[in-house]
Image (cartoon, rainbow, N blue to C red):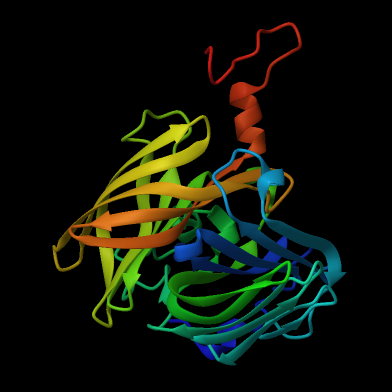
Length: 335
């Protein structure tokens, strides 16, 4: 169970440089085909923080095609995780912990974010068996089944209503969406982070979902992803998901479409299809690449949207795809 105290640091005595506490807040404006992501990583053991703001506006394999990008590493860590005020102009405050947040950012080129994130549910604790059917008992089993290993020694997801404004180089846009944020804490060494997917879909306040899957880089499509933890929020109630069948279409490492069949603890099934509208690669850490996109979801006669992320470790990719200069280039077009 997640409480307000979990919005403060969980720093263990042996934190060192690998212990990390993180926030991830996606903000979508589907009618404008815009997605904004706000990411915070604090390493309290050594007193440093990274802030990462990205604005996506097209579908691309190139990070330089982002509409806007601002990241600063080695910022001083805040005294409290529940009240982050960064020298780069970002503030994240838990105004009604652990459900509600206020995000403000004033950056460069007349770009700003001012939104309220209001939880539509209690945080979904992936290690609580009352929340997730896949929750494990021992710490070793929890790390193995979390989706991101020891980095998610503690982790919750929370679907919320997001309202406010975003200004991009002087042009202001209204925000009124339903999305999913998360908060994690644990030992996070990017060199050994697992490959995984984080998948969100929202059709409004009455229907939204979030999935975490394990990704097997050597398995064929259709059997390469297995359910780690997931929930569906329907008519104000949260139901854990116990089974998932997922087929992902990719161009190279770019996620372009998904076909998902879910079964929740009520044995209710949901069949959904999605395709990417905008997205680009994201390097949250130098040793990882995450293809991050806003996908358009179709469920029966309803249309929704959501932030989808597929994370892979560069050491694992280079082991499989690395080549010497004497080897031929493997083109997407020529094979």
